[in-house]
Image 1 (cartoon, rainbow, N blue to C red):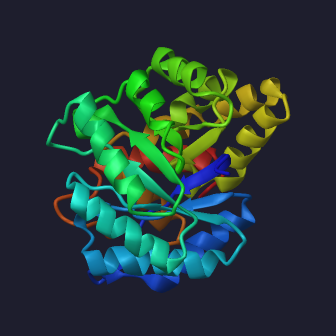
Image 2: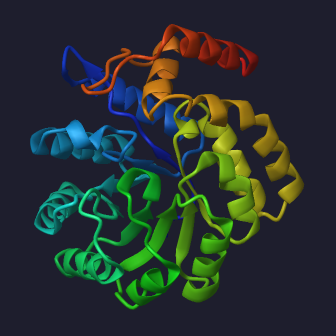
Image 3: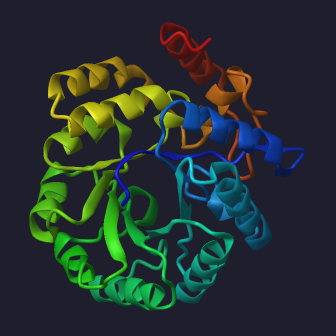
Length: 290
């Protein structure tokens, strides 16, 4: 159900509020570029600084803007189990196609704690659930054995993997079977992950180059790994520079330079340094985006 190129879409702000017009424009840009799914309210969407009302608003806008043209996989995770349940139920009411649930951050739960957290959320929703493992953000790594246990829950159907370990990702693919969707959470590793059996990506880079990310996933799906590899190297510089500072600072700056959003972030995120901004501009020019 969740395969191919999904975008971890930014949340555009204007004068401190969600910019609905810009968000709808970004979604149309994604759909035109071949993106198969929109992922609002993830890390890239600055979910940590959205109020519950804004969280629900962004998902509602995404669902309305997609209208069957792309799936909406709503970020509904939290480090509080009850809050994750509440956010997931709101996404279900809004009409999202699925839920993306990050491992609880800061708490540093055990593997048993992770298991119980996801089981508790899954029991309170009918939405398909994609787990999200990103140890660099959460300080906890969900092991393949825990993921395997969670595949026994009917509506847990995949994982966004951003551990950076191809060995770990290979173990998940091996243990969890063909019907479990393993999606890359790391743009720089997308091609290797596709090569070992991953089914797609939830991408930051797709915010600015949706067509290229779609083409890479589509090429791999059709067995054209030479084309996928060529796209991997073509995107290598951008995949690097978009993480030169904390995500989503560079990608929002890039979208602002492209004239698609205001370059507005939520505190405590700060604008890019002048030096890094110049590097970003140069990379965007080489990619013919400016």
